[in-house]
Length: 344
Image (tube, rainbow, N blue to C red; front, side, top):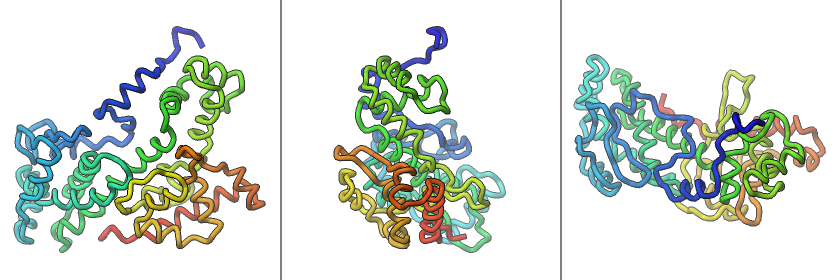
């Protein structure tokens, strides 16, 4: 690889900056659409609240300040009667009335706050969870049909939860993959430094990358296994050949407020939400073992350590492809156990 085409490498000092900068997002693969952003209040990770541009926003031009101020404003926002809600929804639908959208958003912020609170156990910033919920609320308002007879609160819950769940899946997977400074450095650089992104690293290539990033070759190989060894991604559809492409973000639900370290036994506390626990319990012992080994397994330091398909195949005396099928079917079954949040 010539120096002319060599990719920029994120070094340890840069990783420190990322660790200490609350305003740096390490994932940006599911940014909200511009339609939603034009009407939503924006919560910065540093817990300050500012409105999005352009004008026509559901918050004052000066913003609402801190997260505490936002929570107080949400609590004070007046509730709408069924007649008021229907009238505003019709104005938005038929006349694209932004003032109507503003009132609908503000009157349902306490719903977003309440739902977001149920996901605090994942260790992600409350402000970020609320902001994702706000995006879901705006999507719901844009899609709400007052002629269907249901209240907006009922309809919006599904959209709010979906946005928060997608955000958790994206960020939880990265946190699990890269928990130490060296792991994060590898996570951000490994794809660029591999000569062939599809092929497994050779020993010589691992040593070259290790020298470039000032880490051990074993750390390079371990990160490659974490990043590329999971044939079924947490945020990918569970069956690309199926008409029903369920992903784990479809079955992730509320959980208890217990942000414990993610050792195997303590991890159970982080997944103690009634929905997910029920879904796991619905699996046969072999399927549950596969899901826990692939997604919940950690080493002694609390780092994610998914068991490979090959290792599970040897454990059950079946093929790796059969393990993959069991995994996909288990995810689909868990989705079925947790279905029903969408009122329509």
